[in-house]
Amino acid sequence: MATRIHVDIDRARIHELTEREATKLDERTQGSREFYARAQKSLVGGVASSYQSRDPWPIYLSHGKGAHVWDVDGNEYLDFHNGFGSMVQGHAHDAISKTVTDRIGLGTHFAAPTEDAIIVGEELARRFRLPKWRYVNSGSEATMDAIRIARAATGRDTIVKIFGSYHGHHDYVMVSIGVEYDKIGDRFDLESLPYGLGIPQAVADMTIAVPFNDAEAMERRIERLIEEGRPPACVIMEPAMMNLGVVLPEPGYLEAVREITLKHGIMLIFDEVKTGLCIAAGGAVERFGVTPDLVTLAKALGGGLPSGAIGGTSEAFELVEAGKVVQVGTYNGNPLSMAAARANLLEVMTPEAYAHLDALNEHLLMGCQMVIEKYSFPGYSVGVGSKGCVTFSPQKITDYTSFKANQDAELCALAWLYNMNRGIFMTPGREEEWTLSITHTFEDCNRFVAAFEELADDLTA
Ligand SMILES: Cc1ncc(COP(=O)(O)O)c(C=O)c1O
Image (cartoon, rainbow, N blue to C red; front, side):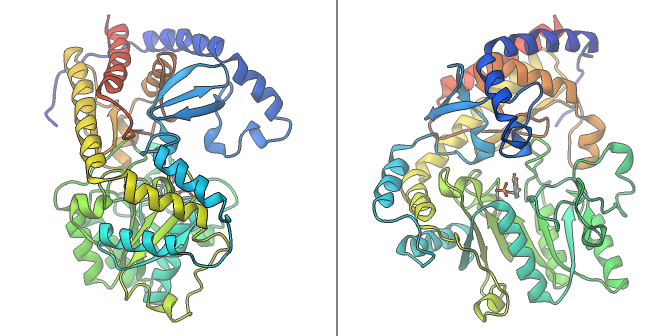
């Protein structure tokens, strides 16, 4: 990214526009306010997951079709959130709806294997260049089981993750995420900090965080762990970080990580819960050409039904196959989820679908970048496959430290309000990116760019 001159955004103007847009959104979502008042009586915080919370109230949705969703007030939006990237197929896709409807009539759960599980496994093996697969029901389950498999295979307890990365809500990985800038510390000796209460420090201490895009820091920390007598079982990482907006791997970084992990007998787990099936047919494995020992999938796999998968080499799965690692779950390979995944992989997410996503995303990224340049806006657009964002930082973000040092949280919050008031449903939270669906059009992307241009214009006028 070339360094450019950019305008300084007046903070008072951000506050003034935030107030105006927040009032406007409140006025348009009075039905959601009423739902919230009712929901608070039975649901904790009025929501099913804390990630759905929002102040002063969440926007409750009623339905979706294709690239569109509607809230309970009847407001229509173009969906760029797509269920945290689960709905890359678009909502209520005909092929998936038909397959699931047909499957319902044949029985929805047996806790016994079905043919669809085999078909899905065969297709995933082809896409991700990993021969063996198991199923789970979410991304958290996938990363939890993958770590257990790596620990068993190596006979080691310590695990290495990337500082600031999210891999689900189980204790092993709820470590060193969402940390304030002044608490990050020395990049060669980052702290293991539990994320939220209820996580034992003893568990957190087994998880060591290293910075993204820094192979030297990773290797130095691994060598120290070996010296201390606690060599790591695995490195678990997103090959492209998807919770600081989008942070792409620098050229050569993933190859270096592969080399380091092989050298030290460490299993490499690519957590592709967000990237897998969304940035290429074979996720980051295909896109960046580096094959790990284990891959975790969820989100977009089930076309909107809860599902997850772990893929791996035959060696990685040896102890599971031998019955020594217990990888289980009542709903694993649920027939409904597997039927949806089959239709999704074989009929919906085709090579043409990926070509369309690439073309759309390029158009959207370019449109946003043109606005940035026209208004000398402090930021840049970045993305891959169906994923992208405008990063509100004049400096390039390469890891958690540069993200915390530079990203403009107030601007992110304002951009979200601008989007919502202009019919663009975006993932709340400053760390999030858009996910396009195959049902989006170039015109839909132009609407996103137009909303962004209005923001840039209002802020720089
Ligand atoms: C990279 C990554 N891994 C794992 C998870 C956890 O997935 P789930 O919420 O399905 O448990 C997420 C969720 O956002 C994620 O982004």
